[in-house]
Structure formats: C-alpha cells, structure tokens
Length: 249
Image 1 (spheres, rainbow, N blue to C red):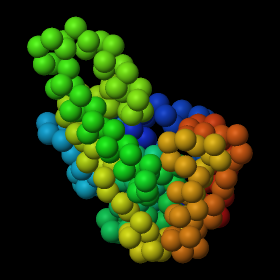
Image 2: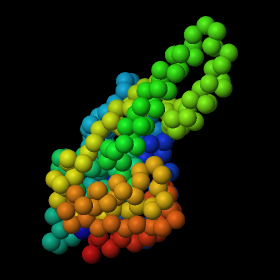
Image 3: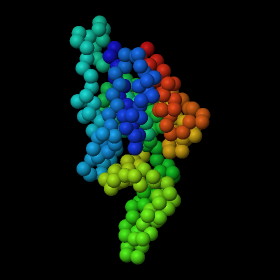
C-alpha cells in the first residue's frame, strides 16, 4: 500500500531537521514530505501572529496540495494511501491537534518530544516571554537606552527565552500564543496507533510530558532514550526509522 510520512519540525527548525530520518528510511517504499512551517526555513512568516490552529489549517491545506498521487492502476486489494505523521516539539503539537480532530486520515502517529502539555514550567515561560516583551519597551526610556545591549542579554538569559530573542515581533507573539495552549484534554480522543519518542534528559519538553501523553493516549507506546535531550528525532533517527518502517507490516 502506498505510504506517505508527513514530518513536522519544531520551533526554529526546518525540513533539514529530518535529514537523519530520511537517511534511516532510504530504501523503503515510504514517500517522505518535510514542509518548512510558516516563519521557518524557506517559508515566509505569517503576516500576523498565529495560533496552533492556524498552523494546523496551513498543514492540512499544504498536504492536500502536495500529497503524492496514488499509483494508477492500484495494486490488487489496495484502495487508498496510508498516511503517517511525525511531529517534533512544535510540530508534535500541530500533529496532536490534527489527529485529535481527525482532520487528516492518519494511520499512525509518531511524536518526538512533542509540545502541548502545559505545566508550571510553561507558565514560567509565558511569564518570561511577557516580561521580555515589556522589558524591551522599558529599555527604550530616555536614559536607559545606553543599557539596551547589556540589558536585553541579561533579560533574555534570566527568563531563558532565546527563541523569543531571535524571533521577529510577529513570531514572538506567535510563540506566546502557541505556548499558552494545553492539549491534555484532547489526548484521550486520539484513537490511532501512536508511538512516543523522548530523550530522558530533555530540558525543553521534560520527560514527565511523555508519561502524560502515554497515559492519556490509549494504546500508545513510549520509547525513552537515556542520555538524549530534545533532539531525539535526530539523535535516535535510526531507531525511529526502524519503528516507522515496522508500522508498514
């Protein structure tokens, strides 16, 4: 059966984030699609701040426009394309919403250090983003302008919002918007085969998030890798590729 793997990268990433996974899946019959999400890679940023739902809508439309055509004629007994979705971090957040709302006919879901579980760390992060935004204006006050270079570095380091520091104003507000949403209530509605991959030493999306998702997504399988941080999709690309390929059976 024709199989497509749609890979959604994390915040600050791009289609290049899946180079190792592509290498791991070489020689298989899986068609791999790796779009740059708006605001990253070669894809222009949105004209106004987005929410997760905006990214979800964009991904669904992008896939409908770029999905590979079915073979003609179809092999005997095969009537449709099989769709796998893999999301890392922010891309995992998008994949969770697509799966929970059944916006695409997903056969298997693969989550790599997926964002979406809100907890005190996220509240601290949102506070930090807001503080950083306010601090930017404070440093414009006459008499404080000379402190801008040092003040901004200290402020961003204090609240640990380096993604925010690098982003444009539109993407900064987008980061605030997507970080606010808690996807836990949506997880029990996901009823498709789901594999969850996580680095035990992840500092961006802590390992506790993996256990929350594993508990709330019925029948999901959790794969934890000691010594691995947030880039589990790259650091354990070979193992992930093997499990993706095994889902074809």
